[in-house]
Length: 301
Image (cartoon, rainbow, N blue to C red; front, side, top):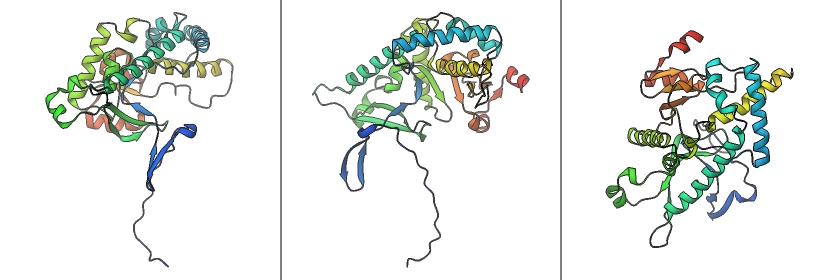
Protein backbone atom coordinates (compact mmCIF):
# COMPACT_ATOMS: atom_id res chain seq x y z
CA UNK A 1 0.00 0.00 0.00
CA UNK A 2 1.30 3.45 -0.89
CA UNK A 3 1.69 6.17 1.74
CA UNK A 4 -0.94 9.00 1.80
CA UNK A 5 0.19 12.28 0.22
CA UNK A 6 -0.67 15.88 0.97
CA UNK A 7 -0.29 17.30 -2.55
CA UNK A 8 -3.55 17.78 -4.41
CA UNK A 9 -3.90 19.22 -7.88
CA UNK A 10 -6.46 18.94 -10.66
CA UNK A 11 -5.07 19.84 -14.06
CA UNK A 12 -7.16 21.94 -16.43
CA UNK A 13 -7.75 20.28 -19.77
CA UNK A 14 -8.90 20.97 -23.29
CA UNK A 15 -10.22 18.71 -26.00
CA UNK A 16 -8.65 19.17 -29.42
CA UNK A 17 -11.01 20.17 -32.22
CA UNK A 18 -12.23 17.30 -34.31
CA UNK A 19 -9.61 16.62 -37.00
CA UNK A 20 -10.68 13.11 -37.88
CA UNK A 21 -7.73 10.74 -38.22
CA UNK A 22 -5.31 13.61 -38.86
CA UNK A 23 -4.84 14.84 -35.30
CA UNK A 24 -2.04 12.41 -34.40
CA UNK A 25 0.88 12.91 -36.78
CA UNK A 26 3.31 10.40 -35.31
CA UNK A 27 5.01 9.35 -32.06
CA UNK A 28 8.65 10.25 -31.45
CA UNK A 29 8.90 8.09 -28.37
CA UNK A 30 6.64 6.79 -25.64
CA UNK A 31 5.96 10.16 -24.03
CA UNK A 32 6.13 12.39 -27.12
CA UNK A 33 3.18 12.16 -29.49
CA UNK A 34 3.25 14.80 -32.22
CA UNK A 35 -0.14 16.38 -32.81
CA UNK A 36 -1.67 18.46 -35.57
CA UNK A 37 -3.88 21.25 -34.26
CA UNK A 38 -5.34 24.60 -35.41
CA UNK A 39 -3.85 27.92 -34.29
CA UNK A 40 -6.00 31.05 -33.88
CA UNK A 41 -3.77 34.02 -34.65
CA UNK A 42 -3.92 36.61 -31.88
CA UNK A 43 -4.95 40.25 -32.28
CA UNK A 44 -6.26 39.90 -35.85
CA UNK A 45 -9.62 39.01 -37.39
CA UNK A 46 -10.05 38.00 -41.04
CA UNK A 47 -13.36 37.75 -42.91
CA UNK A 48 -15.23 34.49 -42.40
CA UNK A 49 -15.61 31.69 -44.96
CA UNK A 50 -18.20 29.86 -42.85
CA UNK A 51 -20.80 30.31 -45.60
CA UNK A 52 -18.82 27.59 -47.42
CA UNK A 53 -20.36 28.41 -50.81
CA UNK A 54 -21.50 31.31 -52.95
CA UNK A 55 -25.05 29.95 -52.75
CA UNK A 56 -25.10 30.06 -48.96
CA UNK A 57 -23.50 33.53 -49.04
CA UNK A 58 -26.37 34.65 -51.28
CA UNK A 59 -28.85 33.28 -48.75
CA UNK A 60 -27.11 35.33 -46.07
CA UNK A 61 -27.60 38.38 -48.29
CA UNK A 62 -31.32 37.77 -48.01
CA UNK A 63 -31.17 37.13 -44.26
CA UNK A 64 -29.36 40.40 -43.70
CA UNK A 65 -31.90 42.19 -45.93
CA UNK A 66 -34.62 40.80 -43.68
CA UNK A 67 -32.65 41.94 -40.65
CA UNK A 68 -32.57 45.45 -42.11
CA UNK A 69 -36.37 45.45 -42.23
CA UNK A 70 -36.62 44.23 -38.64
CA UNK A 71 -34.17 46.89 -37.47
CA UNK A 72 -36.10 49.65 -39.22
CA UNK A 73 -39.34 48.34 -37.71
CA UNK A 74 -37.79 48.40 -34.23
CA UNK A 75 -38.06 44.62 -33.83
CA UNK A 76 -34.35 43.85 -33.51
CA UNK A 77 -32.72 44.29 -30.08
CA UNK A 78 -30.05 46.78 -31.16
CA UNK A 79 -29.23 50.29 -29.94
CA UNK A 80 -30.18 53.09 -32.38
CA UNK A 81 -26.63 54.40 -32.66
CA UNK A 82 -25.15 51.07 -33.67
CA UNK A 83 -28.11 50.41 -35.98
CA UNK A 84 -27.46 53.67 -37.80
CA UNK A 85 -23.79 52.73 -38.17
CA UNK A 86 -24.43 49.20 -39.48
CA UNK A 87 -27.52 49.70 -41.66
CA UNK A 88 -25.59 51.04 -44.70
CA UNK A 89 -23.42 47.91 -44.60
CA UNK A 90 -26.37 45.56 -44.23
CA UNK A 91 -28.68 47.23 -46.73
CA UNK A 92 -26.49 46.73 -49.81
CA UNK A 93 -28.09 43.39 -50.64
CA UNK A 94 -24.63 41.82 -50.89
CA UNK A 95 -23.31 41.91 -47.33
CA UNK A 96 -22.98 38.12 -47.08
CA UNK A 97 -21.53 37.66 -50.58
CA UNK A 98 -19.02 40.48 -50.10
CA UNK A 99 -17.86 39.01 -46.82
CA UNK A 100 -17.49 35.52 -48.28
CA UNK A 101 -15.48 36.85 -51.24
CA UNK A 102 -13.23 38.79 -48.88
CA UNK A 103 -12.80 35.70 -46.71
CA UNK A 104 -11.64 33.67 -49.69
CA UNK A 105 -9.17 36.41 -50.65
CA UNK A 106 -7.84 36.65 -47.09
CA UNK A 107 -7.40 32.88 -46.95
CA UNK A 108 -5.55 32.84 -50.27
CA UNK A 109 -3.27 35.66 -49.12
CA UNK A 110 -2.56 33.91 -45.82
CA UNK A 111 -1.58 30.64 -47.50
CA UNK A 112 0.64 32.28 -50.10
CA UNK A 113 2.24 34.65 -47.60
CA UNK A 114 3.20 31.86 -45.20
CA UNK A 115 4.67 29.78 -48.02
CA UNK A 116 6.66 32.73 -49.36
CA UNK A 117 8.03 33.90 -46.03
CA UNK A 118 9.08 30.43 -44.89
CA UNK A 119 11.15 29.93 -48.05
CA UNK A 120 14.91 30.38 -47.80
CA UNK A 121 17.48 31.00 -50.57
CA UNK A 122 19.03 27.58 -49.90
CA UNK A 123 15.71 25.88 -50.56
CA UNK A 124 15.22 24.69 -46.98
CA UNK A 125 12.10 26.19 -45.36
CA UNK A 126 12.41 28.11 -42.12
CA UNK A 127 11.05 26.67 -38.92
CA UNK A 128 8.01 28.37 -37.36
CA UNK A 129 8.16 30.53 -34.24
CA UNK A 130 5.09 30.58 -32.00
CA UNK A 131 4.38 32.77 -28.99
CA UNK A 132 1.23 31.74 -27.13
CA UNK A 133 -1.14 33.75 -24.98
CA UNK A 134 -1.15 33.45 -21.19
CA UNK A 135 -4.38 31.48 -21.59
CA UNK A 136 -3.27 29.29 -24.49
CA UNK A 137 -6.63 28.05 -25.84
CA UNK A 138 -9.83 29.74 -26.97
CA UNK A 139 -13.37 28.44 -26.48
CA UNK A 140 -13.03 26.42 -29.69
CA UNK A 141 -9.91 24.73 -28.27
CA UNK A 142 -7.59 26.39 -30.78
CA UNK A 143 -4.10 27.44 -29.73
CA UNK A 144 -3.91 31.23 -29.38
CA UNK A 145 -0.61 32.53 -30.71
CA UNK A 146 1.49 34.93 -32.69
CA UNK A 147 3.13 33.02 -35.54
CA UNK A 148 6.22 33.99 -37.53
CA UNK A 149 9.20 32.54 -39.37
CA UNK A 150 11.94 31.53 -36.95
CA UNK A 151 15.03 33.71 -37.21
CA UNK A 152 18.47 32.96 -35.84
CA UNK A 153 19.88 34.96 -32.94
CA UNK A 154 22.21 36.75 -35.39
CA UNK A 155 19.27 37.62 -37.68
CA UNK A 156 17.24 38.95 -34.76
CA UNK A 157 20.12 41.28 -33.87
CA UNK A 158 20.64 42.52 -37.42
CA UNK A 159 17.11 42.65 -38.82
CA UNK A 160 14.70 45.22 -37.28
CA UNK A 161 11.46 43.77 -35.93
CA UNK A 162 9.50 45.75 -38.50
CA UNK A 163 11.25 43.72 -41.22
CA UNK A 164 10.51 40.30 -39.68
CA UNK A 165 6.82 40.66 -38.81
CA UNK A 166 4.53 37.94 -37.61
CA UNK A 167 2.06 36.40 -40.04
CA UNK A 168 -0.56 38.08 -37.85
CA UNK A 169 0.85 41.51 -38.67
CA UNK A 170 1.22 40.63 -42.37
CA UNK A 171 -2.55 40.10 -42.60
CA UNK A 172 -3.22 43.54 -41.13
CA UNK A 173 -0.57 45.23 -43.29
CA UNK A 174 -2.10 43.79 -46.45
CA UNK A 175 -5.56 44.87 -45.33
CA UNK A 176 -6.95 41.34 -45.06
CA UNK A 177 -7.50 41.46 -41.30
CA UNK A 178 -8.84 44.02 -38.86
CA UNK A 179 -7.02 44.47 -35.56
CA UNK A 180 -8.71 42.41 -32.86
CA UNK A 181 -6.81 42.93 -29.61
CA UNK A 182 -8.58 41.23 -26.71
CA UNK A 183 -7.64 41.85 -23.08
CA UNK A 184 -5.49 40.52 -21.45
CA UNK A 185 -3.64 39.23 -24.55
CA UNK A 186 -2.27 42.66 -25.46
CA UNK A 187 0.90 42.79 -27.60
CA UNK A 188 4.03 44.40 -26.20
CA UNK A 189 4.30 48.18 -26.60
CA UNK A 190 6.53 47.88 -29.69
CA UNK A 191 4.38 45.21 -31.33
CA UNK A 192 1.16 47.09 -30.54
CA UNK A 193 2.54 50.24 -32.17
CA UNK A 194 3.41 48.23 -35.30
CA UNK A 195 -0.09 46.73 -35.38
CA UNK A 196 -1.85 50.07 -34.98
CA UNK A 197 0.29 51.76 -37.63
CA UNK A 198 -0.19 48.90 -40.09
CA UNK A 199 -3.96 48.95 -39.61
CA UNK A 200 -4.19 52.72 -39.94
CA UNK A 201 -2.11 52.67 -43.14
CA UNK A 202 -4.15 49.83 -44.66
CA UNK A 203 -7.40 51.63 -43.87
CA UNK A 204 -6.11 54.94 -45.28
CA UNK A 205 -4.83 53.24 -48.43
CA UNK A 206 -8.05 51.19 -48.75
CA UNK A 207 -6.25 47.86 -48.97
CA UNK A 208 -7.98 44.50 -48.79
CA UNK A 209 -11.19 44.64 -46.76
CA UNK A 210 -10.87 48.43 -46.48
CA UNK A 211 -11.31 48.89 -50.24
CA UNK A 212 -15.08 48.73 -49.81
CA UNK A 213 -16.59 51.18 -47.26
CA UNK A 214 -19.59 48.84 -46.91
CA UNK A 215 -17.46 46.02 -45.53
CA UNK A 216 -18.69 44.29 -42.40
CA UNK A 217 -15.67 43.53 -40.26
CA UNK A 218 -15.49 39.89 -39.23
CA UNK A 219 -16.66 40.51 -35.68
CA UNK A 220 -19.54 42.62 -37.03
CA UNK A 221 -20.51 39.88 -39.46
CA UNK A 222 -20.59 37.25 -36.72
CA UNK A 223 -22.62 39.60 -34.50
CA UNK A 224 -25.16 40.23 -37.27
CA UNK A 225 -25.55 36.50 -37.81
CA UNK A 226 -26.40 36.13 -34.12
CA UNK A 227 -28.70 39.16 -34.18
CA UNK A 228 -30.59 37.71 -37.15
CA UNK A 229 -31.13 34.39 -35.37
CA UNK A 230 -32.28 36.06 -32.15
CA UNK A 231 -34.59 38.51 -33.93
CA UNK A 232 -36.13 35.76 -36.05
CA UNK A 233 -37.03 33.85 -32.90
CA UNK A 234 -38.36 37.03 -31.33
CA UNK A 235 -40.67 37.97 -34.23
CA UNK A 236 -41.92 34.39 -34.65
CA UNK A 237 -42.58 33.99 -30.93
CA UNK A 238 -40.07 31.14 -30.58
CA UNK A 239 -38.50 30.66 -27.15
CA UNK A 240 -35.11 32.29 -26.74
CA UNK A 241 -32.51 29.98 -25.24
CA UNK A 242 -30.20 32.96 -24.62
CA UNK A 243 -30.74 36.55 -23.57
CA UNK A 244 -31.72 38.65 -26.57
CA UNK A 245 -28.75 40.95 -26.03
CA UNK A 246 -26.24 38.08 -25.98
CA UNK A 247 -25.22 38.80 -29.58
CA UNK A 248 -23.12 41.68 -28.28
CA UNK A 249 -21.18 41.01 -25.08
CA UNK A 250 -17.66 42.41 -25.35
CA UNK A 251 -16.92 45.87 -24.03
CA UNK A 252 -14.49 48.06 -25.95
CA UNK A 253 -11.87 50.53 -24.72
CA UNK A 254 -10.22 53.30 -26.70
CA UNK A 255 -6.46 52.73 -26.47
CA UNK A 256 -5.78 56.42 -27.06
CA UNK A 257 -7.53 57.78 -23.97
CA UNK A 258 -8.47 54.66 -21.92
CA UNK A 259 -12.20 55.39 -22.30
CA UNK A 260 -14.41 52.35 -21.80
CA UNK A 261 -17.43 51.98 -24.10
CA UNK A 262 -20.39 49.64 -23.86
CA UNK A 263 -20.76 46.60 -26.15
CA UNK A 264 -22.87 48.49 -28.70
CA UNK A 265 -20.78 51.67 -28.69
CA UNK A 266 -17.54 50.24 -30.09
CA UNK A 267 -18.16 52.03 -33.40
CA UNK A 268 -17.28 55.34 -31.74
CA UNK A 269 -13.63 54.18 -31.71
CA UNK A 270 -11.48 53.97 -34.86
CA UNK A 271 -10.91 50.26 -35.67
CA UNK A 272 -7.16 50.27 -35.02
CA UNK A 273 -7.60 51.61 -31.47
CA UNK A 274 -10.24 49.16 -30.23
CA UNK A 275 -9.34 47.01 -27.23
CA UNK A 276 -11.96 44.33 -26.60
CA UNK A 277 -12.81 43.11 -23.11
CA UNK A 278 -15.01 40.17 -22.14
CA UNK A 279 -17.35 40.80 -19.16
CA UNK A 280 -15.48 38.39 -16.82
CA UNK A 281 -12.27 40.41 -17.41
CA UNK A 282 -13.91 43.82 -17.09
CA UNK A 283 -13.20 44.54 -13.42
CA UNK A 284 -9.56 43.53 -13.77
CA UNK A 285 -9.11 45.57 -16.97
CA UNK A 286 -10.65 48.70 -15.44
CA UNK A 287 -8.28 48.46 -12.48
CA UNK A 288 -5.08 47.52 -14.30
CA UNK A 289 -5.53 49.86 -17.27
CA UNK A 290 -7.17 52.72 -15.33
CA UNK A 291 -10.16 52.84 -17.68
CA UNK A 292 -12.79 55.57 -17.44
CA UNK A 293 -16.40 54.81 -18.45
CA UNK A 294 -17.76 56.80 -21.39
CA UNK A 295 -20.73 59.08 -20.64
CA UNK A 296 -23.06 56.80 -22.63
CA UNK A 297 -22.01 53.81 -20.54
CA UNK A 298 -22.63 55.65 -17.26
CA UNK A 299 -26.03 56.81 -18.49
CA UNK A 300 -27.18 53.34 -19.57
CA UNK A 301 -26.03 51.66 -16.39
